Length: 205
Length: 205
DNA sequence: ACATGTGAAATCGTTCACAGCC
DNA sequence: GGCTGTGAACGATTTCACATGT
Image 1 (cartoon, rainbow over the protein chains, first blue to last red):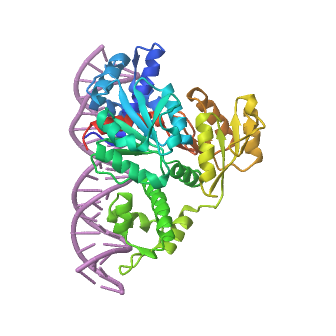
Image 2: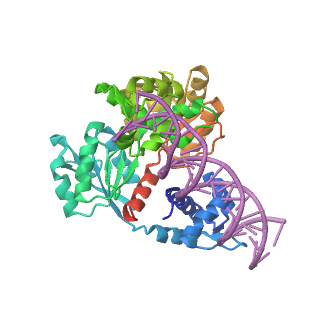
Image 3: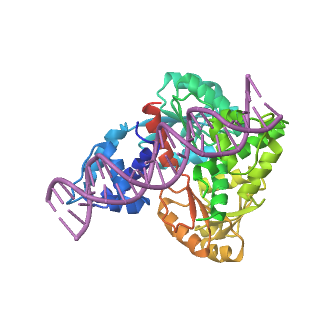
């Protein structure tokens, strides 16, 4: 019911508001949020309408309360348990990246087809065999999965994930995954991103 | 003049058509393209209108000719020279990833603030000192840049890139870059992606 | 019959503009 | 005066639906 774009921006606002709060600002105006995210003041106000928190014309928005409202609206539980499939170069870089994130997201297990990696701890994360994937998901809570296997394997992995009940996937492989509409896929396609940048950097503003 | 979304899809079609061509198919229908990219047939036809190639109701689209039309429309020169700033974990993973990518994109140089890395070859790519960044861009052709430095450094790096005339940026740092509208930025924000997946995997289809 | 190309309608998202409040 | 919240106008994108060709 609430638009995809709006959610993306709310996520932006949230991270922005957090840093503003850390700096000690008590309140903020819509045009300030707009400036910092590259949007317009009207759009910020529209977006904030959906979370059901009202500011005052005098002071704008109380940052602390607004943050609470956004988190409540997003229903963000403070722990997202995730898994990663494909502990190659990219996979390991992401595992390291996650270590810096937290505590909102934790990768509870990594999986790799290479038997040499099974049972070892890679970048602070236990690595299991590919065969363990489905049983693991059924036995543990897994909110979402990160796919970092080669393109040829990605759809197979996705099928297993979907069959086991995973509802969210971040896919780094350069293929569009075919999944039921109940499952949300976020495509992190570097190859497409490069093509896009190559195109737009050459054509008009 | 032609929409952002359409370009994204054309890029999708192109990669898809390439693999279809490799498999030996001579022609394809709009609904087949739609199925494979998760769109609708009508939309595919609309998108293809913009590249100015017409199929026939009998056979659909000649894949070879359609590919040519798309490439011509995108004006894709067969070499995009890029640079990467920030040779940390993520940066190195991306350098390796690029090696696997076609000849369409090559990273001609990497830059890092750490003096220990200067002058060395990292993942098959010469690494230079941060001070070399601006002179390098002015002396060589640089179509676009990939930013993989920590969030705190990203805006500074972007400012240098823009000042030196770079027109396209792929940004992996979790901050929105402020750049003139002449410069195109593609945000590859893993943190936001995770938040998005976390949200949509919990809320409706 | 079935697929294309494309006006026209419908849907979705953004911006305008103004009432109400401090 | 400057800001919020929001109906209404606007603009962009998607889908419908059908004439046309094979």
